[in-house]
Length: 229
Image (cartoon, rainbow, N blue to C red):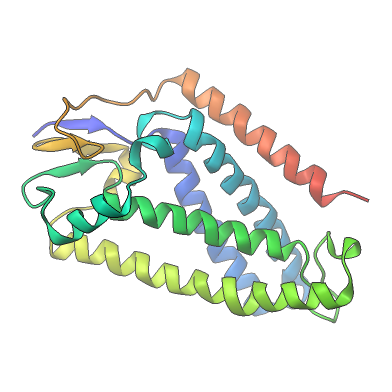
């Protein structure tokens, strides 16, 4: 059984840290009161992470790049119908349907974090960008933050967990373990939907230092935005 590195360490850390931050955001919002400060900090951190992931989608290792894994409708339909040969082989990295899941996740979390910057609760908490918009616009953004993107977060979490369970029990594919170890079984596997020879991604310390520098830049940008006057 051949295993190959498909997820770089920065990408794995991004994934699990974002899981923790979303959980913290939900719990702190439910508690309210003084816990809202934690809610805001978790939101800033999540925004920094999503910005990092977007940049990493252009400069990161092969399987992290949008150009490698984002599939068009034709490939997704073929995957769902099973006419792409996925019944007898395994995709290294994201499969076509999974690529849309990644884009959905980034879009939902980005909209949630950005809208939170302009949201208010009419009591004691408000985002750092509220001072730049009218009260009416802030209220509309607050509605979107709580009732639209907020509910989409719950929907996506449920859908994501259901997909993981379906792949595990129906297709006998463990999607969780590779996101911890970074390695995936490469027997009968393909890259990007082709039959090209499989090869490990670059997960060197140079890549990890680049990721650290990218995350620092994204975090610094969010810090600057949050403290605008």
